[in-house]
Image 1 (cartoon, rainbow, N blue to C red):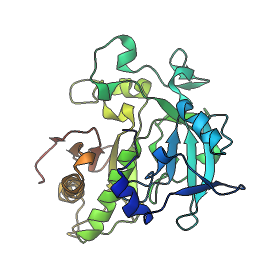
Image 2 (image 1 turned 180 degrees about the vertical axis):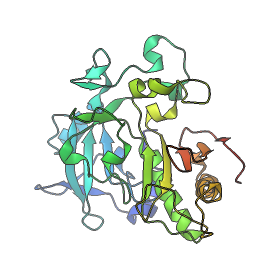
Image 3 (image 1 turned 135 degrees about the vertical axis):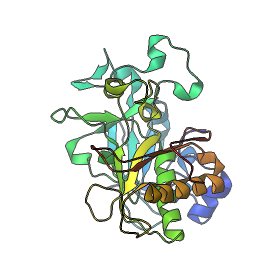
Image 4 (image 1 turned 45 degrees about the horizontal axis):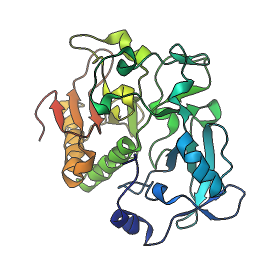
Length: 296
């Protein structure tokens, strides 16, 4: 099943039983091909529809003028005006010698002949991010720029892989924090997508995995930061920022998995170092994984 697609039952619940109609920014209302219905996710807060080259014929038949990879603003007729977008992915085959244009990506393990499980295959494509699209909403709380790999500051456009399932899980985690008495307005993404070239800079025992989920767009290292001080917030209000606060975040993500098993994945606790404060790794790899300490 393609990322972001939901069952008919969930689609009806999210959109009141009607088809989701989208309209180009200055066009006439037209239906999006049915397989894209439910793009808003389990949280109802996702704001992007990801499409690739195989979808172009159907999109054009529906009246969408999509020719080049990039971001196309749209709006939903079945819900209030919103910052929605159709994103046509840049094909994976556009990467030549580990880069697209001047932007260095590197190579995925599968490209080197390494035998990997299906969930560790090469991405189907990349989201092209220009300076102008950095603030394009992915969801209610996240934008495209939140998940970009660090480095290469002067190179534009940049390219990233972001699985809507991860964003959906993060949105549901924010909702769960509020439900448990810890309302959060801003979830800081310390590290989202990592290009293989960037990931390889710190691979080894006690460091990054050579097949890190960050390279597949369904993992993020995050922490609530409503006060904007670049540190995890004092969620339990005991006057300290420590692992007890990180455990509250981890428990919220775990509760989301129990409610929505389809979003099962990794949850890892990381303590403060001289470079950063405590944070939590959350991913949507498809199966349960835990590390860094007990919190459930």
